[in-house]
Length: 501
Image (cartoon, rainbow, N blue to C red; front, side):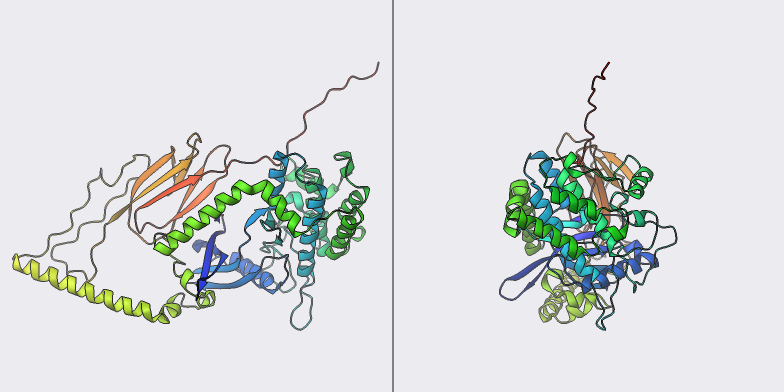
């Protein structure tokens, strides 16, 4: 689904008897970070904190574990978009996002945050969780109208394994609280300020503290000068403006003291204004904003399911997930216990071994009858190993010596073909692969056959950068459709006004 500097997010599924199926997300840490103690501890903290929260407005974490050297976390798949994408889509459709939708979304997010803030150990001790990264990207809205708070990766708690280094800022600068930007001690009221920033931007469709540089952004956050929302949108209720300004009070003691108080104020406002906004209304909004995108996503998921069912989807680490239980993946020996319990796989392996032995004996007898050993594999020509000069050439595997013993496995091609087509065709796409850059809408190459995962990065001006994970086990063709960047906020044009004489 996505890949960043720390981890890759996969869409996966578990299956069971009678066509049981459930989609979920697997967040897999990059292999090279598994030995990074600081990052590993931070990831384990995220798993521990998120797994303890049980609330309909927080994405559920099912399990975490380790397969070989890779840590992973299995969590709820939210079929929808984050609030940033919702606001960007709303700007393209005038009057599509009434303030009541923003109030409903923020009220639900506040309910989820309150559950995290109130989190306790089994003995009753409060953990003192502070999310520290409340922003549009971490509030998801599903197509059926559910709001979910996600990503507790940098959350603070008294019982964290990892500890933030001195003078280290964590979080998005434009959504920090003044005390977070000045590195003062934090409590739940810091998250309330961040959620107030989200509410301000959702009802005004304007950025609040974002500046051209991060230093200037932090300076604005520390000053906490907030314009009145009704100066930007006069039709907003006066009571809503009061709620926003209280949530964004510079001093923590002047804000709402709990996220539940902020939620209650927004709920009361919706009742006073007789605005009906619930799950069904949010679902209708999502359908108006993302009808076409939802159809595209459903089609992509269905195509992926079909490829998995036919065995055409190449996955290395989690290729058996769709047949087994997630709990069996958390064993220290990875997939072996799960494979041990599958008798049908054992029977198939025995049958395959018998066929391989029979093929080896047949080849040996035929070679003996001709009076010599089997001919060595001829290496591929340099032209056949590379169809496009823009991709780095790879040398074919050396041919086996004629005196080497006969292999117990049938021979496989030394190389596989890779083709990547980038859409739209007019995009000036750049592909980064194996520390080299290539340009053009179509990339073709012959790669050495291997089970190692490799990352291909595709970028183009005006489009979002995307990453593609490949495993060169078989010939592959990929079609990447780049998504255009959506401008969230534009500075209003200057208006000249004549001065009086």
